[in-house]
Length: 385
Image (cartoon, rainbow, N blue to C red):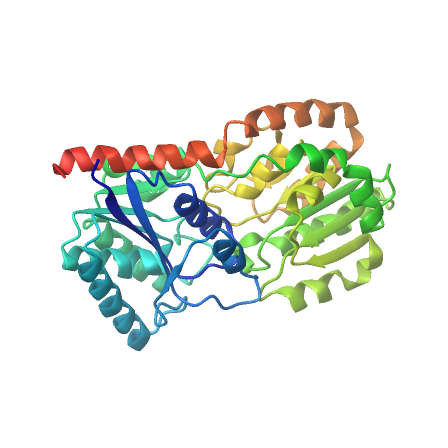
């Protein structure tokens, strides 16, 4: 059987849903059918790195030093040329790019290198929550241009397809919806360790705990979580809140929450997300923009209901009133009310917990990779390879 050569290209391997998705797409690939490489720029930033996990899985990283996150004409031109050289020398059958910067440069380089099949997963979009109006329009135009060089575009949810098509990025028939899966195996033990985890965090066993996990960046909306916590504490002063993660807003958010004292604690970067999720009574996801939100699946696998913004692909994952409560983004009052409603109704939380675990069971990493490789096989047939 012919083995097809695939390159997965991403800007950096920090802690994040896009990076985990890409890593596991390489790790779990069908090696009898596909020979897979991972190409990345350098990993910088306070959000942490998954490169140790990549190395422990026996995956070599082909480094493109000029493939950096922020726009930089000199580095971007060099990254484009280096990617084009790699694609030509290694004669890839498929180039699969991830996220915006690697997505644009990688697809243009693949097209000009004559790669037969080009696939792109944006892992969300840049249409709002990231840049000012002018830059957003500019980057949207680049996405439209790159889509014309792409054989298949993969959104994480059906809503993600609608949002891209509405902005003129690709034709609807180019798009496929494939969720970003999670490793479900740690969660049963994490649920069993709930009381132990709470003791380690200094949270009383019977206390109400709402928490959040993610990069401390503006688009994640954690400032609204802090203000919602403040409102909840006025009504229920015995509540507790935790926020795990790091990022550019770390100092600013800590200053904002300083007056809340021990009732709102910052946990920094953590490697025990399943344990944290299982320790919470409610997981808060106040994002301004979200492609899907793997954190929602992590909460669901732990049986933790969510209070989340109704943005991006979140409503495709959270069943409002069934596995959590959805609220408008940037609405502190609505978010606080959702947290309070769940706090006051443990019976409802228990029902949501069962429903959330059942829903999350369909989002395994193995299923995700099988669906991605099904796209590859379809394109291989279409292209006559």
